[in-house]
Length: 402
Image (cartoon, rainbow, N blue to C red; front, side, top):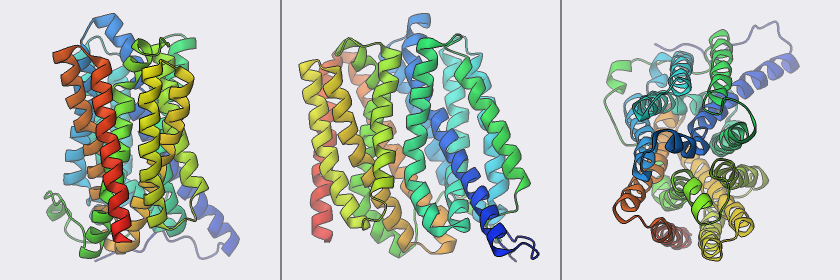
């Protein structure tokens, strides 16, 4: 048994109906933005926490990874749940979990609280991200495909710069950004709860909780082509989020909180701008351009570190970010073009699982290497070379697919 999708009152004229659907769409897009902003908000604060509590760089990597690991688990278990119980219940529940995570962050007294907040945040984001993406596609296929590609990067950029500015210039650096985000999540939960269900419910909710890392055969074929570029882009994001603040401080002699936030903003903001600027490109052209820009940008970032130039590092981050945005947009579009309506949430879940694996696992490995060797510079160079190799493989794969 199914229910109709987001039906509007028949008395509404076409223009009013279209405007109402647009408002609902933008509300959903804002949830993705705020969830990903919340994910990047702690990044500029890690140097502050380290100064307060004296923990090692490997702890930063472990805190960062706890979010990614739990998010992956939630995606695998809950990624298809909204196809069966509806998009709204999943998104609203996740928004309230985000409020709880922000409260834990804001009242944290030690690293155990940071781990807890990151775990709750990862569960909320992993449980909702596919549902939000599928809901946007339910309302508007064309805008939804674009928003699924641009919102993660734009949200990451917004959270990084918002947190960096608050930490550097405003009072209560370890509290204010979290309470601002908590208020946003409450308002969004109220808005989502008030809107009609945008999707269709189907039987099998309990069966959908069985982890299934897969998609339809057509979507899998698209994933094989997109995966290398997506992996390279999100590995770069993990590099910026985990090692970025420490690199900015030690190698570039720049304020860790503000500089780390600006570097992540340059990368993620460029990614978002590229998604918008190249939205009419074919997905294979996007994947090819993305791999090339990732390779060139990552190489330039390493050269900037060698030269000790903050300006060159930020400029290189913009180039690399363009590659990140193009790669992810190409991946999202190629996978969704091959997925059926009933398979959208599951296909998006697979894509996000690949993304967060690429972002989390290398970051943990890099943190562990820094802890063992104490050599941040050499670890950053090795990480960057690995991203360059991945981007080169991605470029070759797109050319072969042709």
